[in-house]
Length: 178
Image: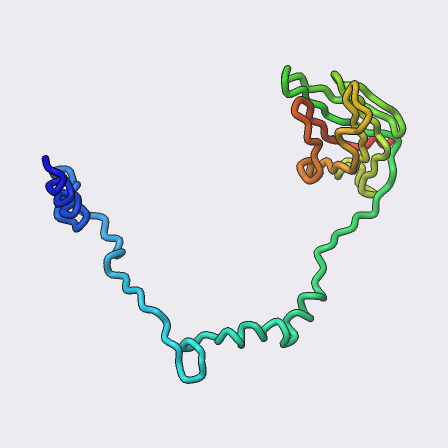
């Protein structure tokens, strides 16, 4: 087939001249997509678009007291917490699949594989020791001076401040109350 024939065939197919349906298959899916008309909005005399707001009106919206109402909304949630004497931590070795629950006292260091975990503090909601656990952890890997993790972890949201290590994962389960 010549180059002109190929171009004409492509144009014929692009214009809808060929049907790609299998025999016996009817178009019983009436979506109405072909009946949709898209019309651009036309600007009226005041510079707006029909019943909508003009750009200037949209820019003025936050200045009409709307922002002041938003400032009164707070999303802060504060628990009254109590300190505990220790915590139960769960450690995972991603390479071997080994999982172990570790008990650590506040100020103690525990070892799991090649990491050392120092528990600085563990706090829980006052009146509900099994409700949640907030643990301050410092984690070091053998042979490195700088910690791979240092900060608060929350038992109910371990991904909020997770330890980013290629081999080990660690999160608190609960605080000890005795």
